[in-house]
Image 1 (tube, rainbow, N blue to C red):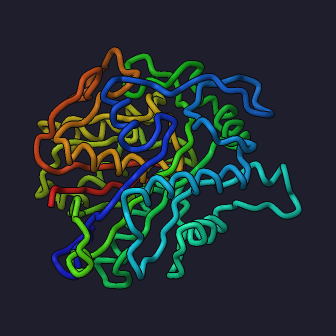
Image 2 (cartoon, one colour):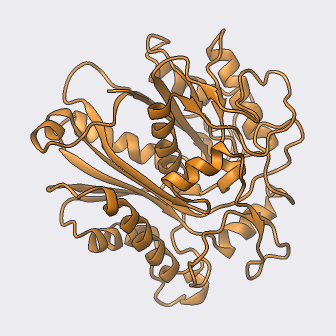
Length: 371
């Protein structure tokens, strides 16, 4: 949780690449209620589950070459609109990286999580400090918080945060064994939801101190007000039914409700227990709940990249003053609260909370505000 001392972290640029396209295409797709989820057959997976697959990535699923190609394409989109400041550290968020390399090239697997920071640095031409965060499906949000902490405590002045994960047989098989995959496109927060849909993608964010942005004439697109991290340690895969971990995150991030929240970009996987946990937590935290939504019915669950991708979408929401519909949502259940459903909703205040949860009971959330 932040305090009133040190440098203020700000956002100076962001971009994404999802199965719907870059940031502009993804936003337009979300607003139009489009879904990219289509059945795809992956090796060693008995069912062709719907996934958010990025077209044109011609390499093998779960391979180092697929990770490298996604990094190159995603960074190319980012650098069309932004220059890389110098010096600039790197924080990477991923879960498994090129997981199928362990099968494809067992003797010398490339593209593993500990390789990706170096791959990114080489593509971006960055020679400064590199770190990797792998905190299950909360990796992206934890990476953003790690970066914000380093800027606030003056360890770093400017950080490139990259979240990246690709579709792989390893991950798909794991979720299949857990019976967590939806046979059709996932429907987050819907009464009849029955599982998640996987996706692949990449998110890129430039975060720096307020003083660094001023000195380098960088446009401040949002400020980071606060954040929270917790671990409820309830179960290796299942979330706490009471939402205790997410409730603690909200308490930390809002400084015990002293920071108003205009809307929430929720984790919203489409599984029965995750969505119920989030709705329970939001209901417990607010008498008058902020509107909330999920993007996973449109682009799938992008694992370690999800937090950075969803932060970028939250930042676009902050810019536009609305949250998009929750694609796939049809019928709610109590306490559904203020789910965006089939239409967009305005923000209560010019702030937005982006939160994610992961295996092992990890919960994380970060609040962005208009500058």
